[in-house]
Image (cartoon, rainbow, N blue to C red; front, side, top):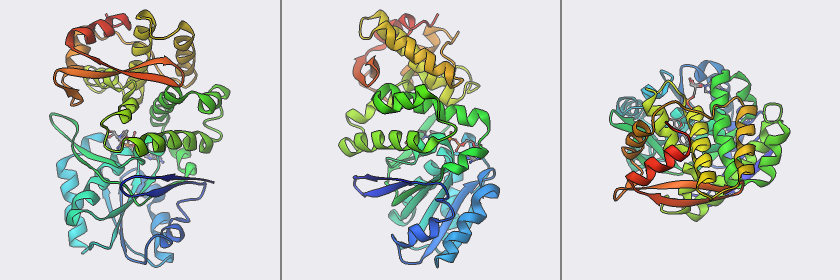
Length: 352
Ligand SMILES: NC(=O)c1ccc[n+]([C@@H]2O[C@H](COP(=O)([O-])OP(=O)(O)OC[C@H]3O[C@@H](n4cnc5c(N)ncnc54)[C@H](O)[C@@H]3O)[C@@H](O)[C@H]2O)c1
């Protein structure tokens, strides 16, 4: 069992423990007097884990209600969010009650945003069930839904009251969802180096995910503690994402998020080598890791299209975009670039 304390606007523990779902009632009863808990999950996760969480919460004295929405990013919308709010109101949840987001990043983002805004904000807990949610989205308090104009355009910073991660839930993940999470894990290894990199080299992630999840969460905790609202160092977590989002968009979302981030990191690191920011050995190690975890490193999308897509990203400020450039494993820096420079970076990274 690992417990990682996150110090933010609201401080909380991330508990990573096999069987955490079955103990969720007991754990949450230490944080809250019995109250109503709305368990929000999607159509894939609810049948697998919904009853276990509700049973545990009810055994600990919570009154539970559950809301299930259709699985998938395309349901992370204002309409989906509105339905959750309506459900909370119909079931008379009050200011002292609780939302439990049981699922992947889509569930955490949308249920978290509902909790952030319902009655001007009620408590919520994250029960992540994908690798991506366990290592990244369940921690740090970013909540959001998508608009037709782009991803995560409406949201709030709203920290959970606890994150209870049960690594056993990862055993039911489809292979491509698992692989997507690996893309984010490799990102943490490139950002942090050290023991996490060693763990990934030794290849024990699938057999024993807990130490890897704990290492990623500890890194995110450190970054969030320093820059909760992403005005500086938290931007480092966008490593691979600027070009990654562009790849997702230009491929018409046929390239999944984790695979796109993998390509984004590879393109950026190739360019960093060409421009003298980083050594060949870092690129070689990154490409070996991506291959080991079944992730791609190449794209045949054009630099022009990728540049245009990257420039329409919301993280653009004053016509410039912050690139996260690797110098070595464990050392990345923020380099602002304008449109022309961005296109040069993409070409140097191997985009046609
Ligand atoms: N808030 C943040 O800081 C942050 C960070 C990174 C990503 N995100 C967001 O996270 C989302 C992506 O998260 P995701 O990849 O977890 O997507 P997801 O929640 O859609 O889950 C992926 C798929 O796996 C299924 N699933 C989930 N857990 C399962 C399990 N244990 N067994 C079987 N199937 C399971 C889901 O039903 C879904 O079909 C995006 O919307 C992204 O914007 C947010």
